[in-house]
Length: 235
Image (cartoon, rainbow, N blue to C red; front, side, top):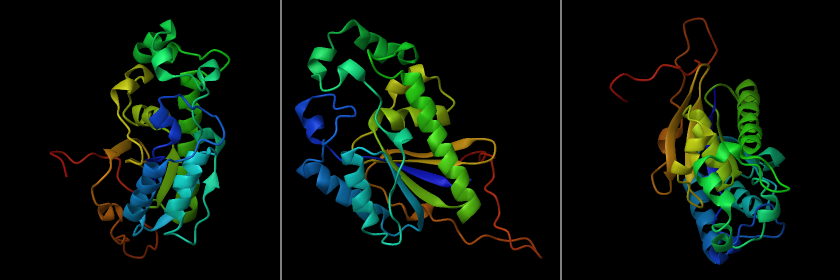
């Protein structure tokens, strides 16, 4: 199956002010975030991307637009399933204030039990995000072949939840994962298991993601399906 490059949006004004923006409309990238978005776009510029999919929130759409500048043949598609967690009454609250709420400890240690007041459960967030990634992955496999590369622009907690699923970890472990602004996290899906190729990567080259020309079997024009087997001893 294809490989998804998960990109967290660049730094936003809410990140620097210490506020939990959630789904608040109009939260945009700050000057540093704009530069970060341009930098990650440059890193992705040479890749043969099949699609760019983004959360509907402005900070993600700005980041996706920066990436699309290098891929004029692609128009970013919006998928609400990649949006930020619905934090409910926590939205627009200071992080320093939220840290004193008894629910904060549960969010840190037992997130699978959390439903935010008047908001979304963290289990629900993970499920709809993973469903979105797998749905797009399957559609792109059908339209572009099993070695397609594509980008999904989303949010820190959402990407962490997708990573936890790919690793076969319980959601309660996802706070151990770090995903920085404008970083890339890469997951390659195969018929029987996903592989976490890179995590929270902000600097390495990405050209190695481009698959080599397929070695078709004699008399066959089909591309080879990526193996689900791990390489014993490492690559």
